[in-house]
Amino acid sequence: MIKTYTLEQGLVVETTDANAPVLLVTEPTPDEKARLINEFQIDEHTLDSSQDSNELPRIEVESNHLAVIFKEPKRYAATDNLVFRINSVGLFLFKDRLIVVAPPDMASLSGRTYTKIRDIRMLFLRVLTAGVTHFVAHLQVINTIVDDLEQKLVKSMENRSLMLMFQIEKSLVYYVNAISANGRVIERLKVNARNSQTEGLTPEMMEQVDDLAIDNAQCLEQAQVYANVLTGLMDARASVVSNNLNVLMKRLTVINVVFMPLNVIAGIGGMSEFSMMTRGIAWPIAYSVFGVGLTIIGVVTYIILQRVEKQSFGR
Image 1 (cartoon, helix red, strand yellow):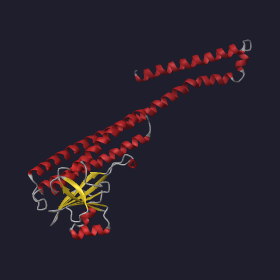
Image 2 (cartoon, one colour):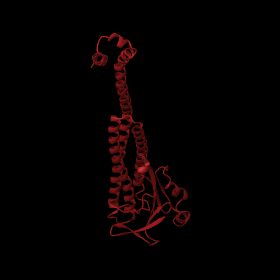
Image 3 (cartoon, one colour):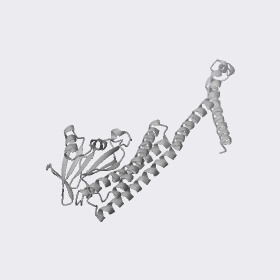
Image 4 (cartoon, one colour):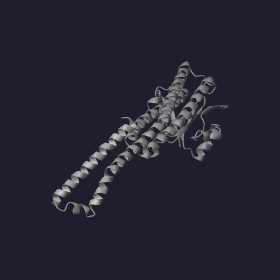
């Protein structure tokens, strides 16, 4: 699908004009791909690469346009189950036209980011800026999710929470790689800032490129910090889960040890010996004394176990 846009009063407005300066391409049909290749002379491999999520970001200078493949995070959906994926975005900048080949979740060029735009070169930089901003927003969400999972792991022994942490850790590794590759593209963009397709970025636009490089570097540092912290604490969180299991097993063991002598005594008393030994005592009194005796033995056994534990662990 191809949507056409024009610039009006600093805004990106959708239009039906086939010769509009801005084209947004999502999931192109074979005919639309043929048009992009034949009419605009876009390299077929580069066009396919802009739709491949595994493609590395890069800049290619063609005879009539500047091609940029950039990474941005895929919009998260509940069905993703805390797996944060990455998409590729292709930008093809001509002297008088900008073609954006984007994934389906980038449905339009609207929002606060796409305001106060004077020409297609500024729009070109805003699309790059939107990708970096999207990464920053996802990192903030990931940090919040990790905090919630930490609380669950401290209180429970469920493997599901731990597996979700591993999925987030894997996603952060891919995020760090994508953001780092985007940074190299931005640096290359500075070198090609005087390319004929850009017609020489104005000083204001060059400042925006510098700001974009700084924002991307800060985003990379943030992603690296989250990834390193999460990696370093995974063993500790696994130990917490193991410790919770050990505590539960210890409590069950204490219960078994307390009732073990009681079961032996009750078993002996159930073989008629108790009735024989208390033949001259009324059975209500005999069994009451027997029950109290079992209780005392259980309490004494529990106290002994507690003292043994304190001596063993020095508490």
